[in-house]
Length: 69
Image (tube, rainbow, N blue to C red; front, top):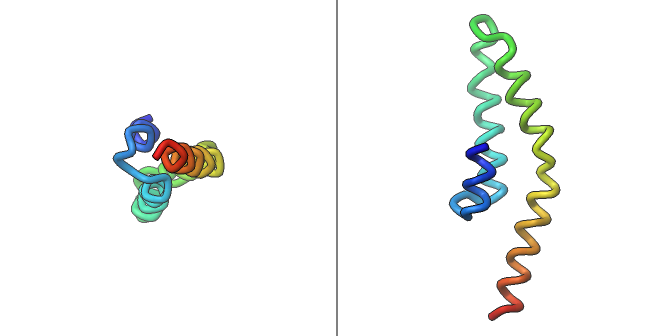
């Protein structure tokens, strides 16, 4: 998934990536008539990504960098 690749490449922070999904869910809300499953699919992906794991990995990376310096 592109968002995870952007996190890994440190183009996006975990916080920014989560905001992308939140924004997508909000933008899909008006499309309920045209694409009724869009909001549900976006929310499902957001929930399945296990954001806590990515926040922990980001914290571990920061800690590792600080120890190296």
